[in-house]
Every structure is written in structure tokens, then in C-alpha cells.
Amino acid sequence: MIFDSQTSIVLFIGAPSTGKTSVINALKDKGYTCYDEISRQVTQEARDEGVEHLFREQPLLFSEKLLNGRIHQFLSAKALNQSPIFIDRGLPDITAYLDMIKMHYPEKFKLANEKYRYDKVFWFPFWKNIYTSDEERYEDEQLAKNIETHLIKSYKSLDYDLIEMPHSDIEDRLNFLMSHLKLK
Image (cartoon, rainbow, N blue to C red; front, side):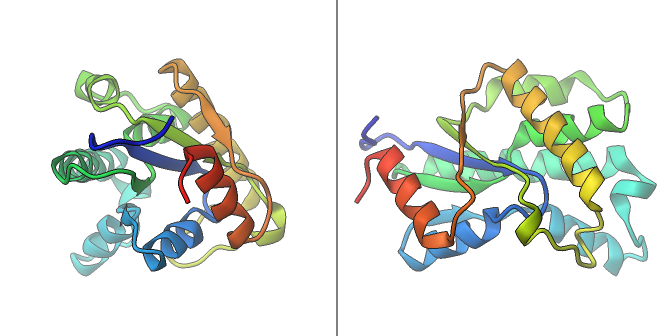
């Protein structure tokens, strides 16, 4: 598919620490419009309010904030009327995480997954060689793999074709992406 004047949103999904943000940053350096993962922002705002880890303490509240933020990202991207636009993580990630912890959630989460559809979804598979954790990324290796399983299930249940990003350096990943999207 060659992108035209309509806005096409390309989504990056995957477990924590699989290289999504590194590719987003490289795309920004090349002048592409990109939207960052917002969970770090939500986590930091909660910490500023005295809640150390909002997802662990109040997963539904955390997820509501992500839902609102990701809908805002999606609508902002569509309003730009340019292509492609890259987004780091999407709405179905939210329900994947909630399903993983077996948390019941309002129907509006499922409705958002159906209403706000991404044009292409690139899946960054778990990659032990680059996996790291930090203050916002608390997941250990086993949890990261479990998250990946739930992400794949969530997106496939919504009939997305997942394009697997190869385990390679950033430049090779960019070349793969550009080739797949028919961009120069």
C-alpha cells in the first residue's frame, strides 16, 4: 500500500523493551510525525500525586487515563491529514493488559478498540538481547513474555494483521519498515 493524502496511522506494539521507542525516535530524526507511548507520562503524573505505581494500585483508573490519552492521540493524528503517522502502542494494548490481570472493564474499552482502527500494525517481538527494565518499566522477562502473548491475542481478535519487526539494529528495522510501507 502506498500512502496518499489521507492520514494513515502506523502502530507499533510489543512487550516492554523490544525497541519500539528507539525506532520512533529514529523516525522523528528523519522528520516523520510520531506519537510517543503515553503510559510513562501517566505513571509520572501519578507519582507526582503520590501514587507510586498507578497500574498496580488502581489498574482501571490507570487504564481510563490511557484510554483517554490514546483516543486523543488517534484523533490528533487523523486531524493532521498527512501520512504516515507513527504511534507507539494503541488502544487494544489497554484491554490486553486488563485481560492479562483478569480485570473486568467497562464496555467502552471494547467499543474504542472497534471504533479507532489503525491502518498498519507492526509487532516488535520479545528480544532477550535488548531487554532492560527501569523505574517506569517494572516488568521482568517472564511478565514481558506474558504481556506479548496477551497483546497478540488482543490484536488478532480484532482482525489485525500483525507485521513482525525483525530482530536487527535500528537502521535495518527502519529499512524494513520503509520497504514494507513503500516509503523512501
